[in-house]
Amino acid sequence: MRTAGRMVAEILQILREQVRPGVTTFELDQLAEEQCQKRKARPAFKGYGGFPYTICASPNDRVVHGFPNQQPLVEGDIISIDFGLIIDGFYGDSAITVPVGRIAPKTEELLKVTQDSLACGIAKAVHGGHLSDISHAVQTRVEADGYSVVREFVGHGIGRQLHEDPQIPNYGIAGRGPKLKVGMTFAIEPMVNVGDPGVKVLNDGWTAVTVDGQLSAHFEHTIAVTDNGPEILTCVES
Ligand code: MG
Ligand code: MG
Image (cartoon, rainbow, N blue to C red; front, top):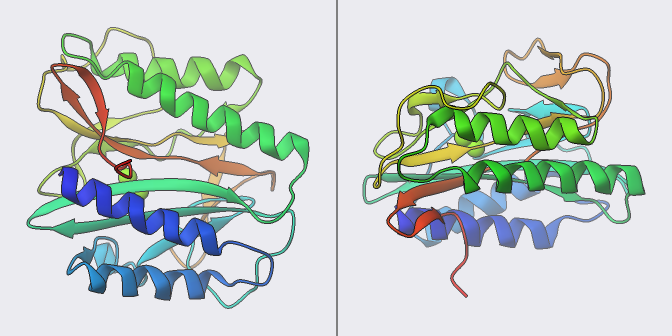
């Protein structure tokens, strides 16, 4: 899973470097697929439940599961890129939200709060803790700054399957759910809205958007509970 996670992180870094005004998410999708082939890894999302692409590309008010398309990104946009792969029988899954050129300070704050909330959740992924400690930590961080947590989509166990039990909501009270043990691996993925927490799915059956049309951000890491605390697997070796 460390190998899978590192590859996911490497490829997301390559995609991030390509994000700029004028680039299309379809181009990013092609690049992600090429990078998988180069590593002899298989994209995790393509064909999953019929999803047709290698990445989920969700700009601005798109929350998750957006289809890559030929529309060029525009200065001031934000683009959530969610990407996973499988190699040697194990999955990695991670998401980043990237600014396109210069973005408004309020939008930067949304990205920072969402990333912070992921870090707060990961910090609770420790042996002896409870699953909902992660959920509670994410929600607390998000709501402290007046943002809202999406309820309809959740984090998940991950390993030999992309989505395994248990589900990990980004809200809830602490001290509930299964006890965490060394060796467990999770994908933790807060989706954070500027306005109302509500989302709806478009007619393509996949793309989730905010009901109020305001911005949404998404960050995700695959992590392991270890003897030394939480270990982020979807990170590039330094
Ligand atoms: Mg993901
Ligand atoms: Mg995931």
